[in-house]
Image (cartoon, rainbow, N blue to C red; front, side, top):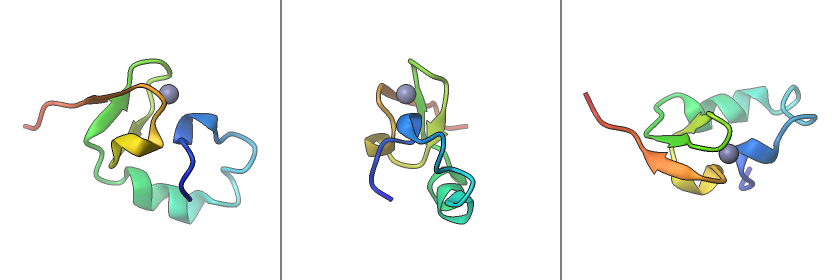
Length: 52
Ligand SMILES: [Zn+2]
């Protein structure tokens, strides 16, 4: 899966296991739609989250 998660909606159900791999350790948040992801390439408007 290489597309932006923000654009995945209909296909998410079938792709759930691979989706989880992309979001299980999120470092970026999308400032447009509020999704989170491990890699910024998977978000349309990524912003790095502050690490604890
Ligand atoms: Zn987005």
